[in-house]
Length: 319
Image 1 (cartoon, rainbow, N blue to C red):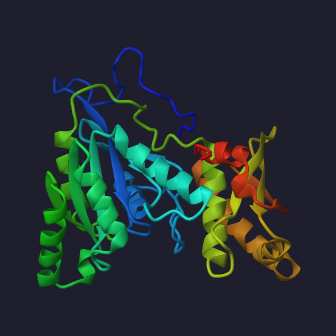
Image 2 (cartoon, helix red, strand yellow):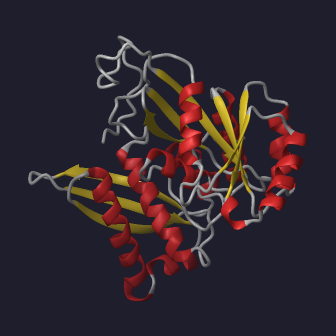
Image 3 (cartoon, rainbow, N blue to C red):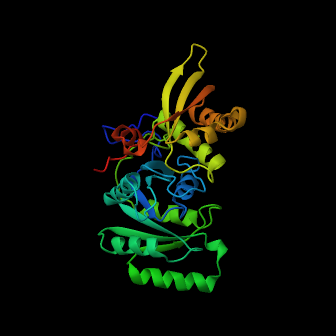
């Protein structure tokens, strides 16, 4: 796996893209827009075929744009996972919502994903209104369709398509993959002809250090999703490759209060040890090398008002 965010190849050719075939290659960006916990990150991971975006029970888990890269026949599809769109209450909220819409701005196709089980609500209404004003191709994805009855699903589809015009509607389950093969085939045929943007074996443009931090943040939230506010942050401070080929990785978990620090560390350090063990396992898989992970917890009051933290997360600092 490469992790340097390599961009388009200079000569417009794509190694391994069906060598010997006269059929043209296709490529493009497909952005996912939806309310928090609609299933965007789960779907991106499903379509790419491996984890590129973290998934937790917490709302607003995804903060910055995460690009997952999938190949279907001779088409390279770059999926852009965006933060959930909701009514922002804080500076961090505003930055995430702005980032979500910026991710959709230049996409070739926008996938509007709606949790069919929840149906229409204020958040979905706001998204549909804005999408109805947006030019360009739009696709409606009704997610978790295996959880509701068909007549309710058809009624929901009618209500949504009356609010915004879509080129296509797909009924899917991001979790079990139902309907995803049809979606991939349609996208692959609809994206424009052109060279691939990334090497064939690259699955994400997220640098390895940042991916490792995201993995640890996922484990942090999965372990403490009821006790810890989502305004906590993880940074990879050191990634040092040793002579034996292993890596020493040091990460800092930033929280805003001493009481939160105690929660993260846990009784006799048991909680942070469990978080580290779970994160280390996935970081090893992503890095494809032995990793020695060291976690530290620091209190940084009002870190969500610090422009430097926003740059680390790939977000624009809202004034």
